[in-house]
Figure 1: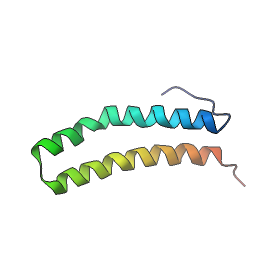
Figure 2: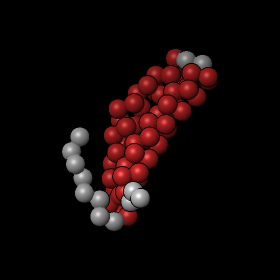
Figure 3: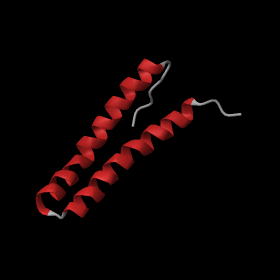
Figure 4: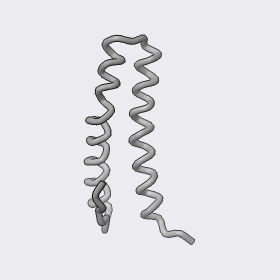
Length: 69
């Protein structure tokens, strides 16, 4: 992954949108397959995993933006 310089909220928002889109493109197929072939529980688990992947990467970057004491 390339380095990105985030200087303001707008930069962060743009990065977050692009990163979330990349995660959905990478893992969204799993959700589509689960929706077609699996139980409601499997669909929920797959959707939760997709959402958690997005949350994890956003928190990782947000933590880097917060000054350390």
